[in-house]
Image (cartoon, rainbow, N blue to C red; front, side, top):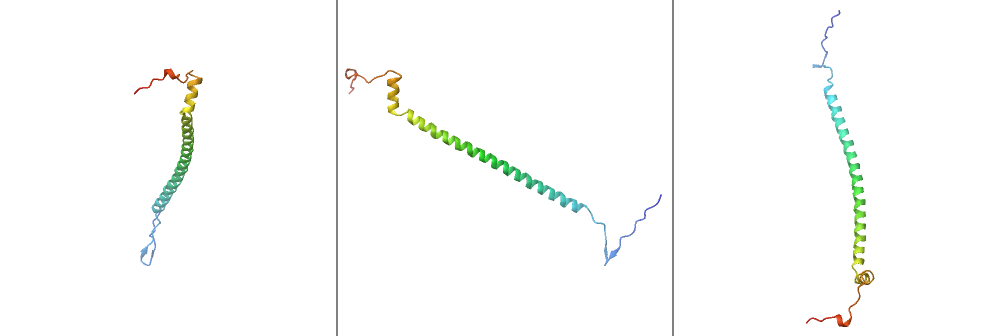
Length: 105
């Protein structure tokens, strides 16, 4: 077997050269990856929330339209002319004769 000998690293202007460490590079790449994933996740969430808001606004428009229709229907059903017509046609009621009217003092 051959033995490997370690050579001393050269010195330049009094500074000893060292092999570069990969740890700072890996940490930087990891942080960049985490920041990129967070950005993508946040954009996906924004699009999802925009879609949900749009759907809820459509539901709100439909509910307001239905409310307006129901108010119109309630107003037409409560009109005195319609009540009188239903009383005469469907219930068979009629106006009282003069002798049936009693005045209370």
